[in-house]
Length: 101
Image 1 (tube, rainbow, N blue to C red):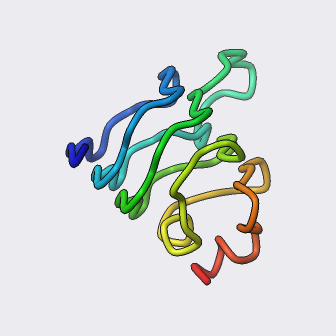
Image 2 (cartoon, helix red, strand yellow):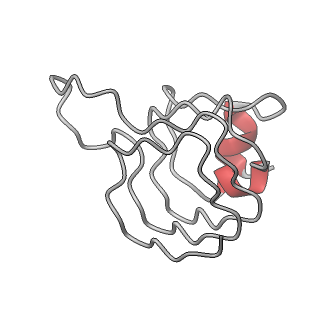
Image 3 (tube, rainbow, N blue to C red):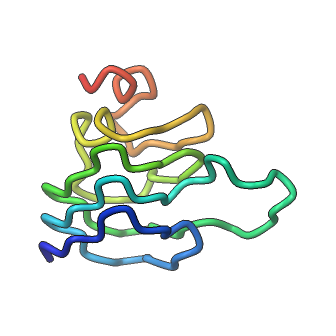
């Protein structure tokens, strides 16, 4: 909790059940942005990860499945980078994330 993991490359990490409460992930790459389409690696795994009050400013979430994470808000994903492949948890839509609503 409360760790600073800024500007890190985390896109192949298995973080199922990880606690990112109050962590600063600013500028980190969890997504697939800029990666080769031929790369068949599964990407970051975040099922049941907790993001309560985590900082996601400019964090790349492109193509990341966030549908089963906990504690994530519209404001957090609105500060991050996402794309049409990003899956959001219930209650957060892509359009809300895009405007940080």
